[in-house]
Length: 290
Image (cartoon, rainbow, N blue to C red; front, side, top):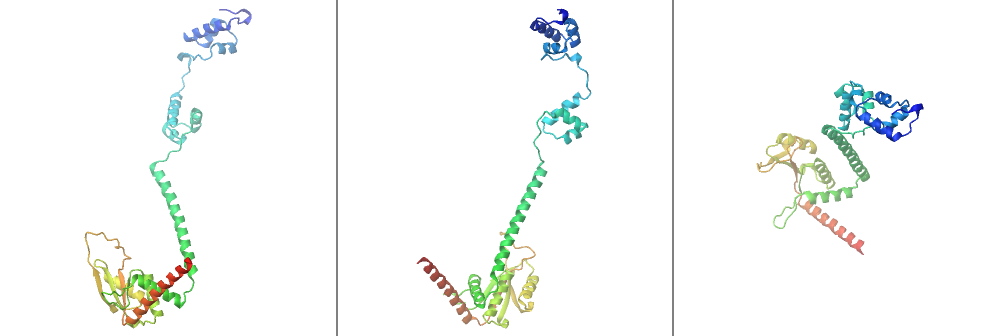
């Protein structure tokens, strides 16, 4: 249909003709010539929403790369990963996929484990610093002990770890056993407060039979300031294959037993002091309740 003087009287009818020609496979130029349309705006309006026929599309060597890049982006790949796989530039990738949502950052199991481990190590380090700070503050708060305070601490320590007299087995003597070197040092200092001479002390090692007895005796001898020859024959603990021992490290040195000769009267004083501490605690509790 011709439109003299460039006038377009029935736009809807003209659109029907343009769409029919487009769907028949004509190009824009062919439709324009066939319908005598010389206004590009009018032509765009007539063909709005109608895709061009395949034969009018110019071939593009990067179309396949673009499609593949978009596919990889939708799979969650990063620009670096897409570039590594397709070999194209990041600028091209950015143009092709910029309308797609950015992928969530995904870590490998190894990366996630490393991050978790680093975070846990930091938490442990903070906890350890707090733990050490608390211990240091408590340690400094003690200050110097008076002779009375040391005596009372030793009485409580002995009653917790030392041998005690029983009605069915008279054991009125001081006998102490422990595996902690610091506890042994405190016990020896307490004996000094009680006026016990070193000549009255006897030592024996109690240790598992599979451990190094000689090395353990040398360690304890050095700690208490005695010759290894001053030690009585070690008391060996039999190995039980049904139980799994945990004290098998190089720091395992068994337990040291300390005997105090001629200490029956001293033992009675210690027992009496212990019950004096108990009575005082009860009286303090009763006073607090009234």
